[in-house]
Figure 1 (spheres, rainbow, N blue to C red):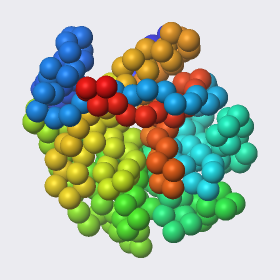
Figure 2: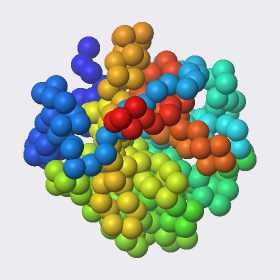
Figure 3: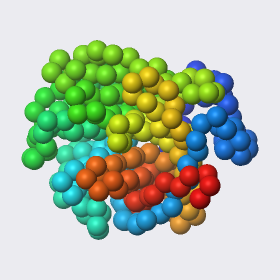
Figure 4: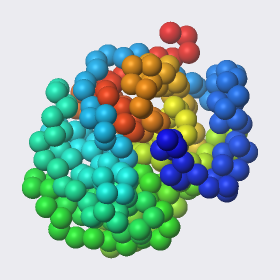
Length: 272
């Protein structure tokens, strides 16, 4: 069976990825730290592990009021879910119509916003009931979504993030993301973490930490060991995708598409 990562491969996307040294290093198995010597590289240790639905093709994730909210993808299987962290039980779920491939997810002012991949439509839900209360349109593809508490911040698989006004849902700012190796392509699922934007990089087990004021890369989180652990125990696991941050406690959670676990992690510097 063809791997799920083939869903979004295009010649232009792969060409862009290969132009960037860090991802070439990953493909060749070269030391990631050596490739990114100019920027800090962090590893992670697992603090706690929680069950996750291995059939969930995770595309969006956030943590609020003690619960996880997850957006899943694939045509005919996409959903919005409210999930209890401790045991992975799905408390509420809304299924998308089969013609929509669900993508990134964010909450702002008691509204949940969910993107779709190629359909150019986003959905708006009431936070409490998960009832759909509106839709919005955008150009291009929808990948990741987060918020700084003022704007919605969206990725589309390129190296540029869009800031959307929450009232008009029109773009008001574009943020190019660059590191020492050049443009950072394939920005995917997003999370706002203590004044930084963290972005999964599609087709990799790496998270990019970036400055929302300038778009400059602040560092990288190398989760290849964690992804390898998940794959060893769960051969059906796909790529790393999904970051959730609990601001009150500072807890960080990560998971992936078709992963059987959600991991609470603590970052380790290169010296640890």
